[in-house]
Image (cartoon, rainbow, N blue to C red; front, side, top):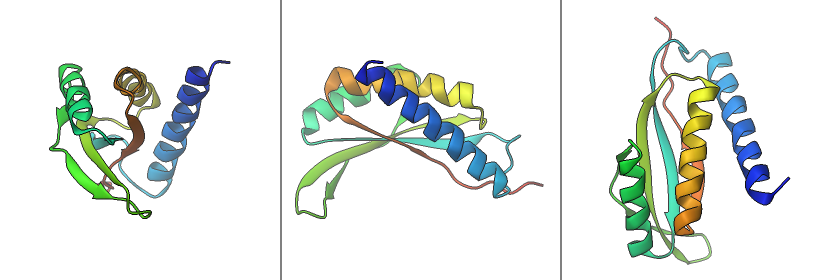
Length: 120
């Protein structure tokens, strides 16, 4: 298995585990969730080019922010946002697209998060 395939497999496992945890905790899996995919890089111009590609891939892109790391280093980051049901196939498709864009621009893809939606 190549490093890219291994990375993809690890993210697919993350997607599945996160979805299961959200549903076990009572988040309403039948409702679309706002999914925020996270990216980071040390070069603002490169990150900006990646953001354009993410936008072209159908995601809403937030403004880049500057973040100071624990070691004093500096990175730039942005979120790509989309509404999705908590279905592994959909999130895995997004993951493949976004990992490809991150690799193309040599930036860091840092997974995703969402907000809890109570069942009605």
